[in-house]
Each structure stands twice: as structure tokens, then as C-alpha cells.
Image 1: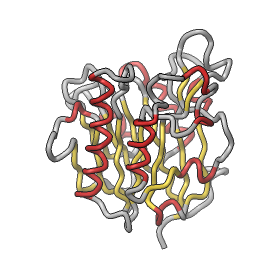
Image 2: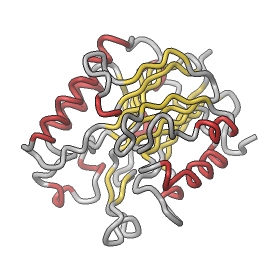
Image 3: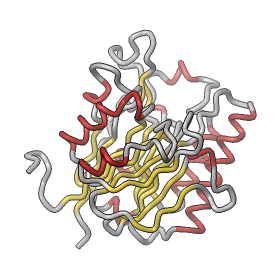
Image 4: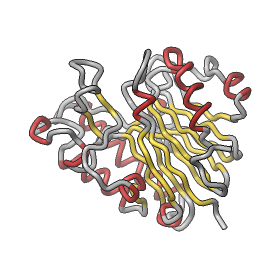
Length: 267
């Protein structure tokens, strides 16, 4: 039994792995010590046919994966507590660049999302990002119940507040922090979701992403853009939330760190 995990908990983690081909040993290592019941992954960068299903099955996990062409993007859900009612993409755009997948695990409706980067404010890529976030809100309206147990996990490519970046003055006019992006994220939260990490950890300068360049990780120049947004009923059962910085260290890490949240199991 995990000595730092109380009994009767459901552990949900989310991690932009930045290529399963490159990061599979790190993912297996993380599963070995963190033992999430549910793991949402983004940027798998593999096709559905190339997804390492057998390896994950050997670790005790069922999977749902939406990989498209496999060169970019890709989202997945691993679960050892059941995996049902799988949907991929949005109803009006099923492909959606392989950025959305959802399933029901242990009675929780779980979504793994990879929001477009946006590149530069004012560009077509930025407008597409805002449109995608609007689609996500519309999809929640049509497919889920905020009164139930719901969690939307993933790389949102939005830092919700200034305390979620290392120096707000360095991001003036940039993506990830612009008012329209934050308003679009807030519109999703207004559906009935809670930034559950922030409920547990209010401190500033807690980050999930650091650029590979210029020693940003070692100098703690990062952003918190990987989020776990839980419905009110589920958020009320949150016991603990943390960012696993150790997964960002060592050989061939992703540029993102996993976010882990423990919830009391439903009564």
C-alpha cells in the first residue's frame, strides 16, 4: 500500500507526456511510484494502432486513445477502475485534431483535453484556440451534468492568473495569459467546474511547464497551464493536489510535470 495515500481515495493524474515514443519509460516509472487510478495524457503523438496498449494492460490499465494521424497531438485516458462510454472529439467536429477524449471511470465522467497553443495573439491560430475553448464549453453543455461527478484534465495552454506565471511582466501581449483566453477558460469554469489544484494549493509560482531552453526549469521560470477542473461535488471530496516536479527531472523528461489529485471515493 502507498504509505502517503490514505485508503478510500481515488487518484486522478494528468500529464502532457510530449510523445509516448520518447517518454514511455518515464510514464512507466511514474505509474510505478504514483499509481494513479486514472491517468489523462496529452501529446501522445502516436496513432491509435501504435498506442502501447499491451504495455499499459500489463500494468493493469484499460485505455482510450484518440490519436488521429499520430504526428502531433493525441489524447488518452488510462484507467484501472473501469472505462466506459468512450467518446472522442466533439459532436460537430469528431476529429478536432485529436485533442479531446472522454470516458466514465469509477462513476466519474473524465475528459482529457489538449487545447491548441494559439502561437501569437491575433493570429488565425489564436482565434482557433478561442473557438476550440468555446467548443469545449458547448460540448459540456450538451453532454455532461454539472451536478454529477465530472473532471476535465489536461494541457489548457492558459495560465489562469498572474500567480501562475513566473513573471507577469515577461508575458505582456503574449498568448496563454491574454484576457480573451482567460475569459474563455472562466466560461468553462462557469459551467460548474472548480480549479481543484488551486483549491488545495493557493501559493503562487507553482508551475507545470518549463521551457527546455535557457535553464528555465532549474531557474524556476515556468507556467501553470496543466489543470484539473472538477465539478463541485467531486471537488468537495479533494484531499490532496500536487505537481510532481520530480517527473520533470532526469533523463529525457517531458517539458510538463504531472498534476496529481486525490479524492475521497464516492459514499
